Image: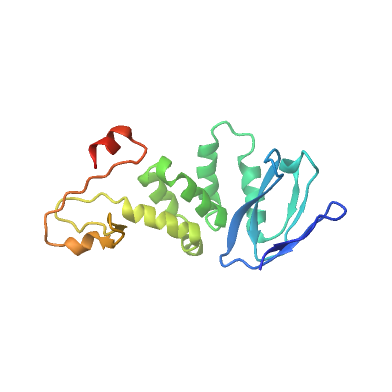
Length: 190
C-alpha cells in the first residue's frame, strides 16, 4: 500500500512495504530535469533536497543506503572507475552493493572476472537478489564442451506454448539465435 501524499510546505511522505530487501529507486521532478538515486528499504528513509540540487540531497535511512553512500565515496574522483569498483567488491565482500555492482557489470567484465569476484563475496551477499542473478549468469555462461549436459531453458513457441529444450532430449536440435534489432536476421526468418 504505497500512497504519495500532497506536498505541503515543501514536504511529502509515502509509506508501504517492499517484498524484497531493497529496491534502487529515484526521486525526480516531473520533467526529469533533476533527480537523485537512492535505495528504498523497509526502514524509515529521509531525503532532504533543494530544487535544482537533487544530486546533492542528504539521504538518511537504512543499512543498504549507508553502504551505497560508502560505495560512492569510495569510487569518487577515480579515473578508472570500473577498476575502483572491482576494488570495492574485494574490500567489501559483505556489502549488498557489491552484488549489485557485479550484476550491473556481469556481461561486460567477462565471466572469469565475475566468477573470481563472486567467489570472494560473503555467503549472505551471494544469496541476495543480485547475488542470485550473478550466480545464474555464471551458471548459464559456463564453457560447455561436447558430450556435457546442455543448459536447459524455456521459451514460448510461435503459438504461445511454453517449450523447454529438455522436451527434445535425444533428438537432433539446431538452435538459431538472432536479435530482433538485427535487420538481416529479421529478413532471414519468416
